[in-house]
Every structure is written in structure tokens, then in C-alpha cells.
Length: 364
Ligand code: KG4
Ligand code: ZN
Image (cartoon, rainbow, N blue to C red):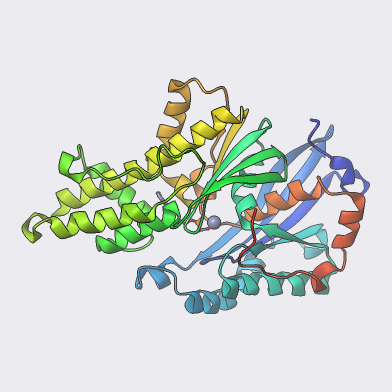
């Protein structure tokens, strides 16, 4: 238990309640997370988890329209927070809000709402990095061993991070162009399948038994010596493939095969790079997070490959419902930031609503 610094919790509180708020992209979310301490060990209970998804609004356009996202967050933020409050707000010990990275107009709604509540309720407010949330959701009633390697794969990010201990992150690689989720979304759009692309592509992929050899796609940067990724070429390769296929052959069977191959190309690169880093940094855990981690094939193949290559690391994967954006992950990240804070840092949280700002380019 060397990594827990529960003593920093005020009077070593037995029951600690965090309200998480998340509006970085196209989900308006709030969640109450309860942490109880017994024998200096935390146990977590999710008291509420509310998400208002904007997918039906953006799907018409094949991607997120920031202006529409912000307007929808404004409409939904109070009803969502209200619904998440399954207990009297006086019981809340800490408010946690995503301050970045994300769309600035979306972030502002959550940040300003959280600041208002912190002021009105006189509660401490903690700014949270969205990407750390995608990792920290794994720590709810699950213990990693450190050092750990984190792979975050979402619609806006593809990053590999070394995690020395709770809340100590160091980025070692990232995408140089499109994120993996963005690649799923763009390929789905050019195949006319709708938005978001990940779930649709994976459904089509399941229908294809095999992939014709003419449909082979590249695995960008598979063997590069760094831990970076690149996915924009994959989308272009699909575009050329579709263009050179005669219209008469562009049927569901072909679409399913392209989906299977696109999904496999992304999976191959993500797994190979992650396991290479896991070996080189001798990590004891591999922790996955982000919307793309909901992909069933990716989850299965990650586990299989770790076994096959006998990598001595524990694999942590969030339950599928915790892969897309949610506010429980923000509350979880806040808990681990809190217990790793000094008394002075904790003290500074009081009345700090004036200082907290949204930062769309926040780095891990
Ligand atoms: O983490 P997330 O909900 O939002 C961001 O922070 O970006 O990730 C959204 C991304 C989208 O690109 C979506 O297509 C992808 O996650 N995604 C998936 C699946 N479900 C969602 N990608 C592949 N397979 C899935 N089953
Ligand atoms: Zn996300």
C-alpha cells in the first residue's frame, strides 16, 4: 500500500465523496463517487453516473460540430448534475472537473458550472486532465503495479504514457496526425456508414469471414523505433481502395472486408507498439483507456498477445461502459490526485474556483 497517502484526506475521513463533471467533447456527464477507507485501504462505490450523449445530434453531420456541442452542453449541464445528486450536496467533499484537453467551447460549460457550484456550496474544486481520467477509471477497485504503461486511445488522442505511480505520468509517444478513433470515424464517413465510426466499423468487421488479398492495408509506423503513431495514411489508403473498386463491386461484402482490415490494421499497430514499450520499460502493468478500448477485437487480441508473448505484466482494461467519456473517470482521477497532494496543495483547493481555467491543449 506504499502508494496510498490517505493521511492527506482531512482527518483521515472514513467516507469521502467526489462529484465529477465532464464536458470536454460531446457528452455532458456528472457522477458521484464514494470512497470508504478501511485499514488505510480505499473501496469505491459509484453512487451515480449520468451521461447525456449528443451522438444523435452530430451523427447527421458525420462528426462533431463544436458550436452545436457547446449549445447542447449548456442545455444539459444543470439537469445532468441535478440527476447525479443522489444525496444532499452538503455531503460532497470535493468537486472535480475536466479542464482539458478538449474543445474549448465544450470545456468552458463544465468548468464554469463547476466553479459556480464550488463558490455557492463552498467546496474545494480540483482541475482534472481528461486523459488521466481515462486511465484512472481502471483504479476503481483494481490495483495496478508500478511502473505501469498506459495506452490512451480516443477520438482525439493516441498516446503512450509511463506511469511511475498514481498521478505521475510521462508521455513517451503519441500520434503524429490523426488519432486512432478519428481514423475509425473518417473511414466510416468515407464508406458512408455514419458516426461514430468505431462501433459501426466493428459491427461490419464481424460480418466478414476473410479479407481478400487486394484489400490489404498498410500498418503505419509499425516498425519505427519510437513510440509514435500515424493513422492518417490508413484513411487515405481506404479512399484509394474504394476509388479503384468498380461501382458494381462496392457491396456490403466488400464494405465488411474493408472494415475488418481497417480495424485489424489499427489493432496491429496499437498492440505492437504498446507491447514493445512494455518490454523496454519493464513495466508491471499495462493500462488501457479511451473510447476505442470499447472495441471487442482489440480487447481480446491484447489479452491473447500478452499471453502469447509471455509479457510479465498485468493487463487492466475498463469495463466497456467506462471506455467512452464519462464523469466517474474524472472523479477517480481526482481521488488519486488528492491522495498524492501535499497538505499545502490540498489547502490551496479551498476557494480556488477563481483560478481554474479551461485549457483545450492541456498535456498529460
Ligand atoms: O474517449 P471518447 O469517448 O471521446 C474522446 O475523448 O475522444 O472516444 C471516442 C472515440 C470515437 O472516435 C469512436 O469512434 C471511438 O471512440 N469508439 C470506438 C468504439 N467505440 C467508440 N472505436 C472502435 N471500436 C469501438 N467499439
Ligand atoms: Zn475521452
